[in-house]
Image (cartoon, rainbow, N blue to C red):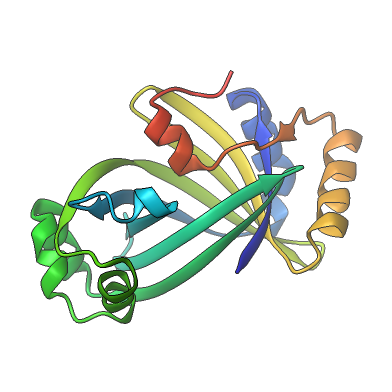
Length: 201
């Protein structure tokens, strides 16, 4: 179970202001390319699950992670989702990007689970989006500040994984209020927004 605080920033100005405030705590920036898949008979989406390939690009050492997410629930800016992830060879990932059917042949614990638990016998690509994720070590937690690039617009979000989400959320909200950073609770996942084809109003 992945538990994360998720807060939405209203615009690029708030995003830039936050990046500036957090700059002394910066660790790394990931350029992520996220692509999603379903079973050819909608076996995953019909059970509130999704399969994601995430590539870390623009780096000396490209990486690829395959991830199964299921039963996501977001309440009061806290997301709880079942997640199973593992790293795979990026060249294999890119081959599956071109030809989703190749996912059936990949030797992967996550994909075995997808086939066995969900009865998937083939895969279809759903498309995806890019994300620039700036990562910070701040006040004993890891803050991830996202600039999500959808075809229909950009979205800005702050995430923080924690087993004590309510207290961490309070810490972040206090920091935002002291520094005049506008925010709201995230109501839906990035994937749900992608599937809806429009930014939340």
